[in-house]
Image 1 (cartoon, rainbow, N blue to C red):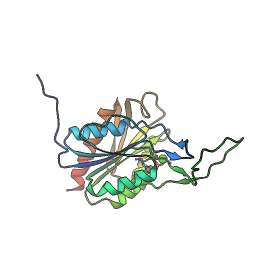
Image 2 (image 1 turned 180 degrees about the vertical axis):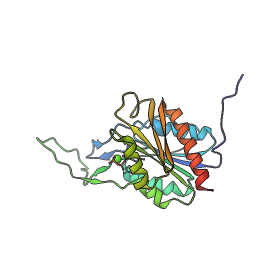
Image 3 (image 1 turned 30 degrees about the horizontal axis):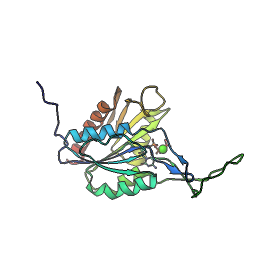
Image 4 (image 1 turned 120 degrees about the vertical axis):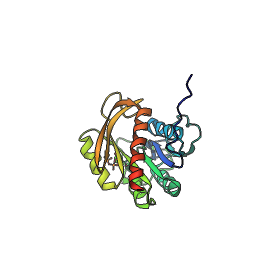
Length: 225
Ligand code: CTP
Ligand code: CA
């Protein structure tokens, strides 16, 4: 007889997690989206909660069940995710940005359904980089974890994003691998941090979540002295 293991190493932490893929409206019925399922972010939320953390989960375009005990805020667009994440940031001691945020939004979405024509040109503008703003606005001691979704030069790009965005940890994954990454139940990748890196072999998203939290916890200890 064994009681299910419920850790307590994250007790006292408030973990803000973004999950899923944002959707940018084109018109009344269409949007620009991506293949993110939200599974990695939801696995992180469940794992952090089980280890004793308060969890604020901000999700886009997913209908996954919300892990028990997590505060959940649903958003649609990158702009809404930005606004919500920055509003919740003062409460957070750890931030994990697992969401796939669209890099572009339609300059002037149509309120009516656009009728089909032979060709259609949409004018797109950039969305704000939420991770970068989180890094700039966080209070001292708040650990910031980002993801890097790549199809080539995975580790190099992950390290570049660590440096350019100023995150404490980047989880770099090769999203071109079959059976891992987008919408899969498994994932593989490399944890990239200032002092080094650690390969995570193909594992369940829950196992990967536990390893990300282990790494974030050890960075938190260093950061806070
Ligand atoms: N991200 C963000 N806001 C955006 C775009 C990305 O906060 N507008 C975050 C993602 O949540 C992720 C990290 O930045 O944690 C990296 O996302 P990714 O798409 O891999 O990197 P980009 O900087 O957008 O670069 P590119 O898509 O050109 O590879
Ligand atoms: Ca991007």
